[in-house]
Length: 123
Image 1 (cartoon, rainbow, N blue to C red):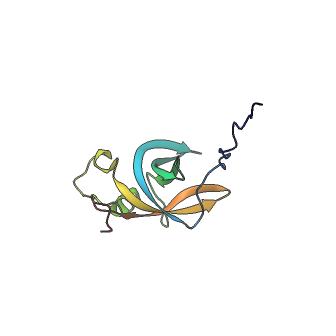
Image 2 (cartoon, rainbow, N blue to C red):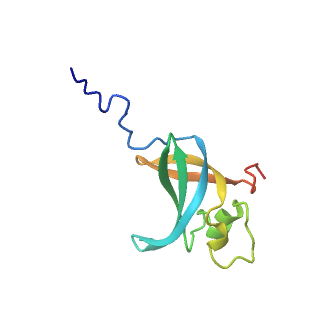
Image 3 (cartoon, rainbow, N blue to C red):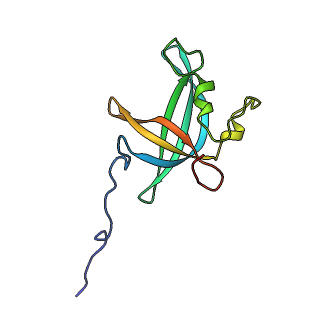
């Protein structure tokens, strides 16, 4: 008698394992320039490992912010290796941070970021 048990130990992953208002350790994966309805933004993409899944989530910062918007300069100040002398995003890539996840219109995004030092401790 053959027993077909394929899939019994597997579970179907949810669309995303992220949860709103949770904090995760994340790595800044990339920064790219995007255009949202004529507004140029820099998209910061963070990589998170949750439940053995790799998930990516973003934060879009306007290149030319309005009065009540966060500037790229202010966003970068929250990163562990912030330096006024940095001219590109290269020094920020692959650095670990704590990120706070928010949700807007059903989409998850990085609401805030806090620096970690090279050994993983809070700065």
